[in-house]
Structure formats: C-alpha cells, structure tokens
Image (tube, rainbow, N blue to C red; front, side):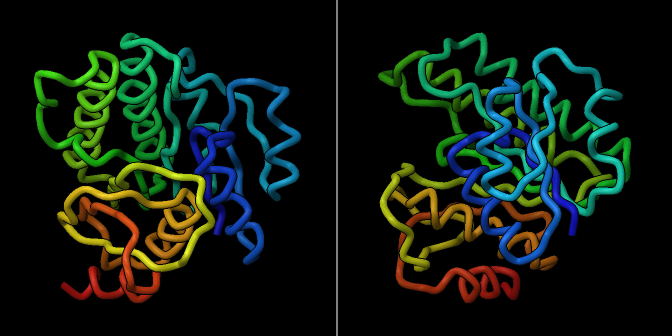
Length: 220
C-alpha cells in the first residue's frame, strides 16, 4: 500500500513509518519543517514538506494522489497554546479529511485521544481542555463523512515504554496507559482490517496480542 501520514515527524508517526516500511509499504510523511526530513528518511518514509496550518485542500491533495490510505497523527504538541489546538488538532484534521475525499482516498485513520467524546471536567487545565474539545470536534467531522472509510483510535495516556504487543481494544476500555510502540502496531493492524471501518475505539495496555484484539473488535 501507499500510505500518507499527517504529522509525519510525531513520535507515533515515526514508529508507524518504520513498521510500514519494514513490511514493504510505501510511506509518505507530511512534515512542517524541512530539517525533519532526515528522521523520516531514516524511518523508511518519504518526507513531504507541507504546513497543514496554512495549506489549501489542493496543496494537500497533491501529496495524496495515488494513496491507498491516510493516517492523521498530527498534533500541536506540548507547549502549544489553545489556539493551536484549534488550528492543528481540529483544523488540520478537517483539512486532511477534505484532501482525502478530494482524491478518493477512502481508508482514513485518526489518532485521537481518550476523553475527546465528552466535555472536560471543570478542573481540567484550560489548554488540555481545548485539546480535548478540538479532538472531539475533529472526530465528529470525520465520522459525518460518507466519503471516508474511517476508524478513530483513542489511546489512553501515552508512554515511551517498550511495546509489549499486548493491548485492550474496545469501544470503551476505561482509563489506562499504552506505549507509543503499541499504538503504532495497532494502527498497522487497523489498516489491514476493513471490519473496523466506522468504529471509534479506545486503546490501553492489556493482555491480548494486537492482531487478535483488532480481529476480535472487527468481528463484534
């Protein structure tokens, strides 16, 4: 497959690019800064410089021509304010979905966040609350699109621990944490499983092998 990943220099995206390239897929990662290109090349991905905060649908669509799938893994990241949660975590996701529809790329995965389906509690840090609202709005936009075969993945608290390959994947898992390694591995399995189209799934560490967990969800 040819897969285009938004947020190609992110921690999950780089892991995903390595996994996809290793199995022989053609991977392009959209990045904002040219100096990030070397890290993508080292991961086996083609770096594509395109600022999703300022690009047009046509700009992004040019990079998605001929793709079999798209993965939105971009985020404003730590240290950014509420305004960039809106322009990246929501706005760039909507733009990326627009470009996928414009080019006929139906398979569309979103890396979202647990908690994006409800209003944040009153005591939530304002910037983190803005992040959750932006993620929730982006998810709602994607779910409303008949032109996409979408799957939304909502991991729990992310860690850099080595992946175990063992997860819990369900419509609702309850709170927990999960390694970025295991998130990337789950995304690969989701790409291969059409039975997960139209599903919003939560992900935490668990005791079921990734492929078995994805297969079980697809059969429910």
